[in-house]
Figure 1 (cartoon, rainbow, N blue to C red):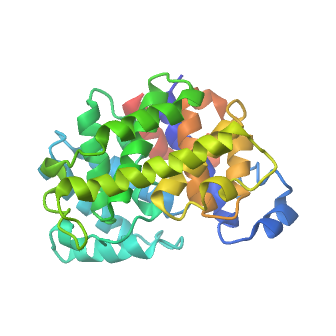
Figure 2 (figure 1 turned 135 degrees about the vertical axis):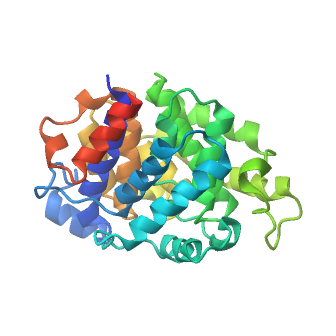
Length: 329
């Protein structure tokens, strides 16, 4: 089924479809594309945003790593993020949190000091899909990798928790879980992790104003993720394909809402991935990130064959996406 390829290409397809709608209101999106949103890639190549670019940077670090130890992976990600920041292609309205943190990483600061401590923007988890596609790692290693890559730029505990849940969703879908079961699986994971601070991966990141202990720090992130899962459950209890999904599960500018609204869109159209991406792109929030994550989830669930023929040659970075997909399929 080539689920890793399906997930990586799905992320890029969603990103490309959401790119032209990200800063438009819903009225203008529907005027241009109709109520179903964009359904066709535009351009050759069809350009993506910093969401796919940074996911590729995460993938670069993982593929180069000889082990999953934090002191091995962190410098590889540091180099990959700095290379992204200096790339001439880094002209897709990148997030200020990422730019600020990567500049501090380049200056040589410890990542716990380089990160932006109050940020839980979706830049933390729009790039985490490659972690969920790794084979032969246990859930604790997946959690450590997901939280580390998030924490290097976004130091808020919810950024860490939402990134872990995003990678975990990709993992369970790639392993064959039904899409409809994912919200409950994420809730179970979040409940089980509420008091788990991964000091071997995060070091002293928890030492921020307002946090009294490591468990208190990370527990706040899990609580916010559980709250947005409540909103997701409520939306799915009365699904409405015609409504702006952001009204129910959030606009996606922050990490936990990007996760929830992407799943919301995917579950509205579980057997029609292109329609799900169109719905995600036709939303009032961070449409490229929402659609990118929806594509990652749907591709992991269905595999590469679910996407339209020919898209894989037209999407920007096709060769790199194909290489990572082959490595992890």
